[in-house]
Each structure stands twice: as structure tokens, then as C-alpha cells.
Amino acid sequence: MSFLPPSTNPLYQGARASAWFLLFSAVMTLVTGMIHSFLPDGGAGVIGGLDLNGRRDLVIGLFRWEGATQLAMGLGMLAVALRYQSLTPLFLALVIVERGLISLHGWILSPPANGHHPPAHFGSPVAVVLAAVFLFLSLRTRRS
Image 1 (cartoon, rainbow, N blue to C red):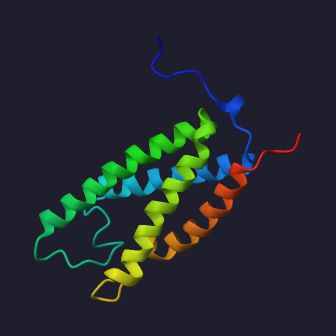
Image 2: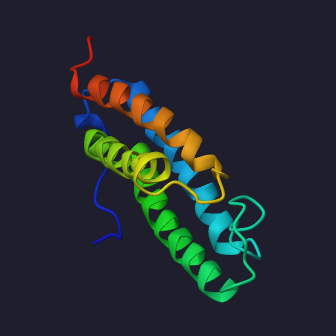
Image 3: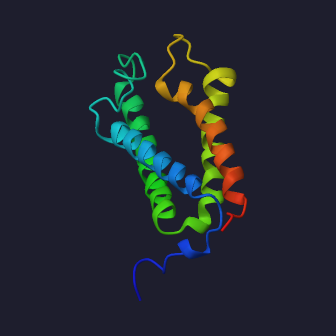
């Protein structure tokens, strides 16, 4: 018995570009996860523009928590993009949910009081649209 089951890539019949987009999304998720996990302020101040004078330990702790979830999700996305491509549609749908919620909260439900939007607020709506396009392509059977 091995740690990973056999690859399902031969079963995937959607667009190869969708798996490549998922791979790109995985790398971006892993990079932001590393920033939130390992940057001294978790990116809260230097990237997010947050004032850390009040509860610095709490804010950094929350950013580290987010980094941990991003690293786990990014590794899952990486495994799907490289080895289990038959799960590409599911993971693209998860990208749409995650980035859609980030967009909804960042721009509509709870925009930053200081008016400073972190990079994720700008990139997330774009990611939703791109992931939707690649989700559509991943559900279509490839022509031989």
C-alpha cells in the first residue's frame, strides 16, 4: 500500500488548460500561504495595510491561521492538478466559492474601514471569472 492511490489522470477528459489553470492557482495559493505563515507580520501590515498597534498578536495569529489553511488547500490543488486531474472540476468549483466569498466580503459585505484593499481583493474577482471559464472547459469532453 502506498501513501497516494494511483493517478486518475487517464480518466480526465476535460480541457488540459483547466488542469494547468488549477496548477497555477495552486502555486498562487501556496505562495500566499507561505507569506501569511512566515512573513514576520503575516502580511497584515506590509501587504494588507492593517494597523497592528492594538492587537498585533491576535491579527498575526489570524493571518498565520489563514496561511495554514492556504497551504493545505494549495497542496490539495497541486495534487489534483498533477496526479488526480479527474477532480479538476470539483477543485475549480472550490476556487470559485473561496474567491467569490473573498470578493463578496472584501468589496460588499465588509470592505476595509481604512479604504486599503489587499491584493486578494483585486485578484479574487478575476480568479472567479477565470475559474468559471476553466470549470466550463473541464466539464466538456476533449476532442480526440
